[in-house]
Structure formats: C-alpha cells, structure tokens
Image 1: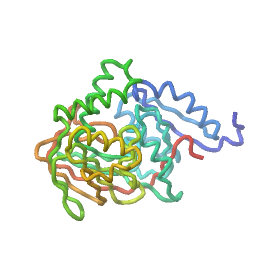
Image 2 (image 1 turned 90 degrees about the horizontal axis):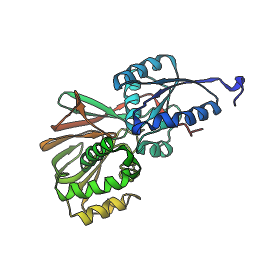
Image 3 (image 1 turned 120 degrees about the horizontal axis):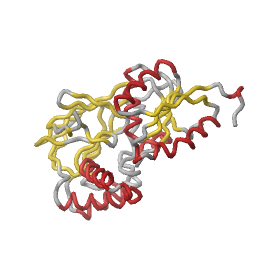
Image 4 (image 1 turned 135 degrees about the horizontal axis):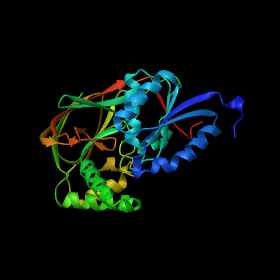
Length: 309
C-alpha cells in the first residue's frame, strides 16, 4: 500500500455500471487498487444515466486535474466531449471495461508532448452535433452493431462469443445486402462517389475489435483518415477484413483511403451512423439522415490509461 506521503495525486472516476453488461462493476476493484498503488487518492462515482454521467463529468472538471472513466469506448467519448466543452486541461485516464475497447490500443500508440491536447471529431446531421474521440462509420459497422447488440441484450450469456456472432452478422448482412450505402463524399480536396459496404471517418487507428483500419490516424493532428470499401463479393470483403489486422487492406483496389480536415457525405437515402460504438439517436430512436458533415475541434485534455506511467 502507498504511504500517506505518496498520496499526493487526486483523481475522480466516473463508473458506468452498464458497460459490457456490468463488467465495469466487476473490474473496478482491480482498477481502484492499481490507481492507489500509483499514488492516487480516488474519488469514485457510479453514474445512473448518460445525463447523470455528463453532469458529473462537468462537475469534476471544476475540481480535479485528473479524471478517470471506468467503462467502454462510448463512455470515454462522452467524458471527452463534456471535458472539452468545460475547457478541461488535465488528464483523462481510461479504465477499459467495455465489450471491445479499441480506443485503449490507440492510447498506447498515440503519444504526444505533455503540453499538447488532442482533437475531438464532430459529426453534424439533422441539426444535431455529436463529438467523438475515435470514429464515425456507416454501412456494415452500423448493421453489425445493431444486430449483435440486440442478440446480446436478449441472450447476455452469449457475450463470450461476441466476435463469432459478429462474423455471422457480417456474412448475413452481406448476403441480404443490408450493409450497402450509396454516397458522395466531398473532401477538402476531391470527391469519392460510389456504392460502399464500409465507410469510416476516423482519428482512431483500430476498429472492429482491433482491425488496424486507419493505420496513420492521429487525434493530435487536425486531419481525419477516411476509409471507403466498395461493395464487392463476400470472399473479397472477408480478405479485406482479414488483411486489416495488419493494415494490409489498403493494398486492395476496392479500398479507398484519403486524409482530410473536414468533409461532407451525401447519401442517396437516409441512413444511420455509428459513433464510437453507439448508433446516433434522438429520444431513444435512431437518427437517419441523407447528409452528414464532419470536422475536428481542438481540446486541452490529454489521454492515458491506468497502465500509463
């Protein structure tokens, strides 16, 4: 146990008890012990809703220089969004307890000088703007997210098989042509247009359980990585996804890769978007829009994990 002399750091931790079916509650004691071992005096609050989470994030921003989030990627994004608005200039520490936690892989890779704050992406549609830490996507990711989430909510005992269920959902979505989005993407320099299975705008290198989809993405730079995968046969699509484990998917002619500081996407028909693991919603209902616009906002916060020294 640390001595009183070493207990010079204070941290407020927001715990989301619903992350990954309650995993945050199970993992919190280990995280708490790790924080105390690193010399932190811990103030922990278990949130009761997203609104409650946001209120306490803003409140903690006024009193603490270090704030932790025990939950999944979407919980971390909500905290980052509120802290940027509060002009928080301290450290945000991620205690990963979600189903996927792709963001933790990027925290370990994306390093910056101590004084440099990261960017948050912002996506606007139908008069509503949502900031994000990682990525926004359309097409296959949305369909698989919806289906896997529905299956696990009804049969939570299958959570250990989430990746296998995801693969089956990919195959089914492609067979039924549910993943197709027809889009015109207007970039800062140039236009992409076509019929896509995957459309990803990211400042996160990893996506979909560790696939290295945007290998040059950087949330300390003002540009997004845009990955658009043309609709193709299932065998080529699966080869692209397998190659994405090491970033090799960019060699396929069906994969288009661009960098841009801002962009707009016009879809042929209204479609939903997924932002850092959650489908955009208003009043508990999915938002479907034909037009999305994206840009980046500068923040003053710095991101670490509980394992960071």
